[in-house]
Amino acid sequence: MDKIYNKEEVKQETLKYFNNNELATNVWIDKYCLKNNNGEFLENSPLMMYERIAREFVRIELKYPNPVSYEEILKLLENQNILPGGSLLFGIGNDHSVSSLGNCFVIGNDSDSYGGICTTDQEQVQLMKRRAGVGHDISHLRAKGVPTTNSARTSSGIVPFMERYSNSTREVAQDGRRGALMLSCNINHPQAEDFITAKTDLTKVTGANISIKVDDIFMGCVGDERKEFYEINETWKKLIHQAWKTAEPGILFWDTITRESPADCYEGFTSTSTNPCGR
Image (tube, rainbow, N blue to C red):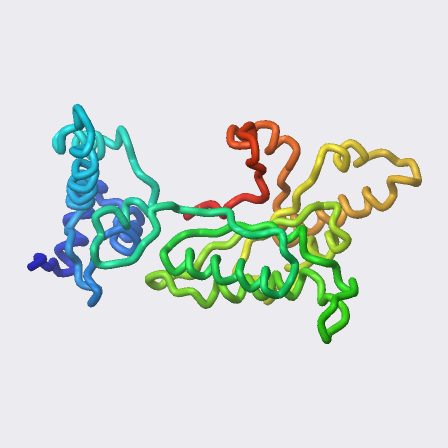
C-alpha cells in the first residue's frame, strides 16, 4: 500500500528543497506531486518524484545493452542535468492517472466539413483531458457566406468555430486548471481581419490564444505606400493595434518558421501550426 503524506509535511519538505521559495513549492505541489485518486499525497518532495521517474527510466534501460543504472539516472535528475517537461514529471511512473507524456501537440485535418471540424474538436479534448496542450490551424475553413451543400446553404465562417474550440478548452478540467489551446490562421484567409479582431470583446474566445501566420510576401508589402498595397497596410495597422490593445493575436512569421524548422526538411512533413506555450 502506498504511504500517504499530509499536506503540511509535503509543504515543509518541498519548501526545504526549494530554499523556501513559496511559488516553486506551490507549483510543484499543485502540478507535479504524485497523488492518488482521492487527492492524497504520495510524494513529499521533488526528490521522491525524481526517484519515481528514475525507476521508470531504468525499467526501459534494462531492455537494452549497457543500460544506464538507476543511480546514474537519479543523479542526473537530482542535479537537473536532465529535466523532463511538465507532463513527463507528472506522468512518468504515475499509475493513478491517465496522462500524456507529451506537453503539447499540433493536430487537425484539411477538412472544413462539420465532420472534420468535430473530429478536430474530439482530438483536442481527448488530448487536453490527458493534460496536453493543443494547437491547430483554421486557415482551411471556409469564410463566412461561402456556399455549402447542407441545409444552412452558407458557411458561418471561422469565428464561431474559434469560439467552439475555445469553449471545448474551457470545459476540460485538468486537476483544477483549464486546457491550453493555440489557434492560428493565415493572413491571406478572406476572414483574416475577423480573426485578428475576434478577441476585441474580452468575453469571446477566452479559452484560446490566437496567432496570425504572416508570410514574406505580405511583410514585403508593409510600408509600401502605393495604392495597390493600401489594403495590406490597413490590415497591418489593425493587427498592430489589436496586439497593443488586447495582447493578441501573436504573429507567426511563417516562411521563416518553415525555413528554419528542422522537421520541415523531411519529405512529406509540413508544419501547419504551433502549440501553446507556458505550460
